[in-house]
Length: 618
Image (spheres, helix red, strand yellow):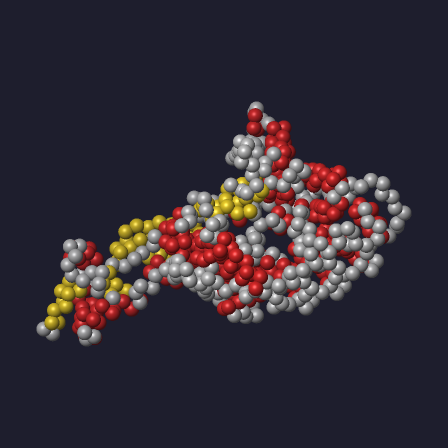
């Protein structure tokens, strides 16, 4: 249960498992277009009745596509983004928004994800639904603006009036610019006209005044990202490095001291970033926590902004008050576009980074919720240690927080308290399990992460998995069958994809035997195929092969007599596979006589029948 929910009254649950009815016919009920419109428009009303909205997103492998369905896939869907935005724009109360991946992992969602993932840029199976949803989003924004005005909350009104440019991305609907009536202007210059209208709608009188919340017109304009308006304010002597005086956490989640440049980077207003940098905005200016625009560009997968900031002198090595550098955060914070995050990692690593840096980025990505399979693969290919222990930046504040949460774990267990309790000496795989980053865990296992390493508490990844209801693909991997993890992760490893045959050969043989001892006969038992890597097909041929020799055991048997060892191998290979299997089926071995000595070659000790083979086929 989420703390704060009423316990003295009955708890009612609305379980939304029906999709909005689609126009597949003209009959009664769900296929009536009017019913469809009513269903779409009722979504905000249902959300407003809820005190807790739960996102059920357990990691499941899609039966047909073999893709992993999880919180990341959930957040790509336009309908899901609409429900999430409705929570934040509710005029009744703000409900708890909780994501549930398994019985042991219930977490509050990362609060700013709805700003990174606008509804209009989400996926819609039926493209025409996008414009139907646009009307709902437009209506929600307008109602919330009127709500703030009625309450006299001018700061959040001004914030939302500008944030609508983010909420309405991807829609063709117009912006709301006439909430406050009575605007009349004689200005002929477009720049002066827009500036005058902007000040009127915001209830401000001067381009440089600071309101009761400690924000200036430039700070509000940065939320909207209109480059013409920003230029007009700068021409009226607005400070290009202006910062907000107080944090704003209800709508935009900005820390005190955040600059206009930081806000533009966080909200991906690229044109506005260019304007500010052309007017000499400082890319290395931090907020109250010392976090710079470069930090936010890295943590938010904003590749284009990072390029502009670095070209203007932005540093990827500056540390904030928690001792994090932008490079440490290059694995992302919260759900990001995995493709953009990977591109950002590749660009940052192009100049060469140490293994310590890439391993620290891997751990931070897991801890802060950005670790998709693609991100983990990119960091490993950039040099991160697949088994490297936790190496978070040394910060007194961070260490105090970890110490407190570790102590609290004894009486109040949460995912983060478990991390704090177990993190010292923990590998990325252990941390992935503790943080519920199961896609990351699959990628780490596919990359050869060792399952039996123990942390300072004496726990291994397998121990931690036993205490958690991990998905089947991970449970199978811990039982010795990592094939599902390998197939899931394969598409993310570029170097692997370029050498498909060698990689599959390595995966299935597990390097147990050197190629020089892979001799003997082969029998095909079965064959199956799996779609993978876009239009490629993986054809797995299950075979038995004999014999694979254990060189160390043979040397011990023959007392390092090279000739005797060669004779033993050659004699064993005179048997075809069915005959050899029949001789060994009762547990007895094959006797070889040479130079007055008899050597007994025992199955499983001196030789085995080989594992599966696999080949790639277009």
